Amino acid sequence: MKLKSYVAGKWVEGTGDGRPFIDPTTGEELGRVDATGVDGAAALEHARTVGGPALAALSFAERGAILRAIADALTANRDAYGEIARKNSGNTVRDAAIDIDGGIATLKVYARLGQSLGDAKVLVEPGEDVLARSGNFAARHFWTSRKGAALQINAFNFPSWGLWEKVAVALLAGSPSVAKPASATAWLSRQMVADVIAAGAVPEGALQIVCGGGKDLVAALQPMDSLAFTGSAATGEMLRSDPAVLRAAPRVTVEADSINATVLGPDAGPDSDVFALAVREVVSALSVKAGQLCTNIRRVLVPAEHADAFRDAVAAKLAGLTVGNPADESVRVGPLVDLDQRQTALEGIAALSAEATVVAGGGIPDQVVGADPQAGAFLAPTLLSCADPTDGRAVHEIEVFGPCATVMPYHGVDQAVALAAHGGGSLALSLFTGDRAVQRDVALGVAPFHGRVMMVDPEVGKDHTGHGIVMPQCVHGGPGRAGGGEELGGLRGLRLHMQRTAVQGAPAALAALADDATEATL
Ligand code: NAP
Image: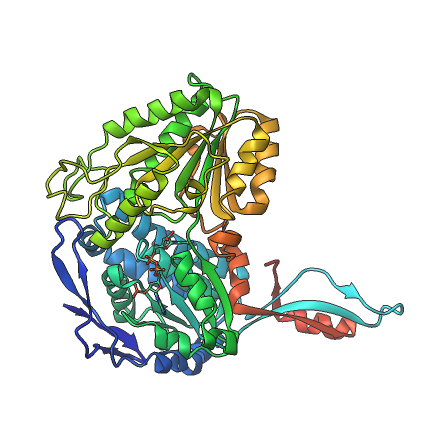
């Protein structure tokens, strides 16, 4: 099987040998990804000239209805996706649900937002600024859809959610998408797009996919286009400084990796409910999707007096996790996406070991359920303990993209905030405390370094949505190391694809323009 690309209304196959993608449970090749000879520039031009005008002719509510139709087409084919996710991503049923159902749920949220914006095609911010003493001259801020293509380059770990969270926002804003999934797991993205196209759910040109390649797409970007990238910090840096990107200056947003932290409050002793909730969350971070979430907990900041108890509690739970073939119902931790990723993770653990001690796992498991631990990309859930995190660098800088986290003690809440900031900017931080003063000092203390902060106290209990889970209502992205981007966040996500313009004029003229717009704050 060679994955085709959907460009300018046709499915086309690359003419080269391509790159293999595998079943990470066995190492067996499943197919190839290749975009040799696939015209990326033509895809972007088709988006601009065919998809863009088609979407521009529709209201927000009509675009919302398209998102609903996409979600319905995907739901109708849901079973096949679980199978692909197991075979190609090594996903357990639960892992696959986070990716697949997370994507469908995000589409539905944006479908409802489209409905709420009604029949307008333009948004206007509430309020008017009077610019003349006479009151006869004023300004209002309008949002209109940009006239470019939305190039979306995605990471391997969320072939469904990563695709649809970007398409949903772009389509609602009126921007046609050209999606480029990561080669390792492009199969699921390609299959989903094929089903959506076959269902006739989207106007021609509003959704295209290029499997493989990527450089020619970036080279063909124009000023009104946008580039939304999700992946490693290194690739993000390369794309941001690409000559074509610098020259054309499209809008760029980067979602990169980060060394996210969770903080246990000083009040949360080993017998407290909050302590148990934090242990549960860390164990989840070391098992769900085999730890391959960009938002995942990498550093666990624990009051020094509870550090040993916390480390031992997590290690005890890890010992009970079953690693192996995701087809086996008892398995909680599947393989990493491929052997290269495992090798990189092993090298990362070795680098962390210079500053921290391995408490659990640390390498390839001796045995796994239903598979060969060497031939498959298995990595044991790994917990490290770093006695002196103030001196450590690797523990704050190296992302082991797998089931791996490091426990580190802190002395006083101010130090916990300072250590969290050592990550240089992160996507998410979670805080487990029942103390309101600690909530205030930590949540607002770390906020400048984070895109999202999740506070868990006894009142929230188990009702929270999870440290690693990105909710479409909340902004996703983080400053600095995390890429400096921002996606989702309900209507806030539309900013990437729309232009805010201050329109000045007589108040009556502004009111007439605003008559055709829906009032909204992005
Ligand atoms: P990656 O190696 O950086 O690749 C990301 C994407 O960039 C892939 O689609 C890749 O295509 C593409 N790419 C690479 N070089 C390119 C070029 N010169 N021109 C155009 N496209 C190019 O990242 P990954 O290994 O797939 O994903 C894992 C990383 O992503 C982790 O570090 C994780 O933390 C991060 N991540 C971040 C988020 C977030 O929202 N912040 C979410 C998920 C993952 P090919 O696969 O075809 O090479």
